[in-house]
Image (cartoon, rainbow, N blue to C red; front, side):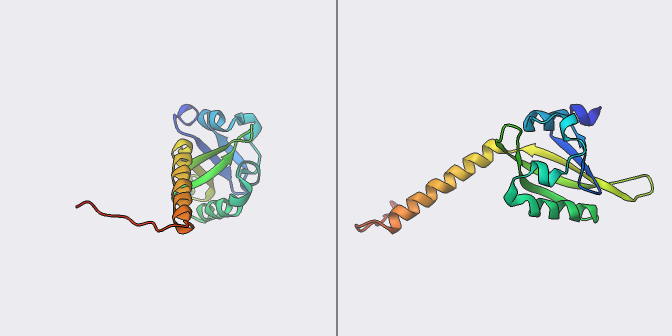
Length: 143
């Protein structure tokens, strides 16, 4: 119950990549209920196309015992929106220490990620404007 009601998105997969844990916060962020998510392949169902291989690699590494911290992934919500999550992928083991899956504990960084991308885009536009200007542009330090 602690996992279900945690204020952070927590999800888990088994050794086949199928969702076996999906807490209330993950359901709230993605729009998929626990019942809809359980048994679905995490990477191919919920991750945006261009990141599926990369995310699968992180999950495969965790299934091999190599955990990953602060990995940003993009979840596609039920409504088609993209949510950016910063995830720690932790190996899940049974009582005999055998690897049985991966648990992802995440932080929703969607607003920060959108802001960062907007700032980067604006900086790029300004750089292009300066590079293609038809007049001399120079700067002066006021020190």
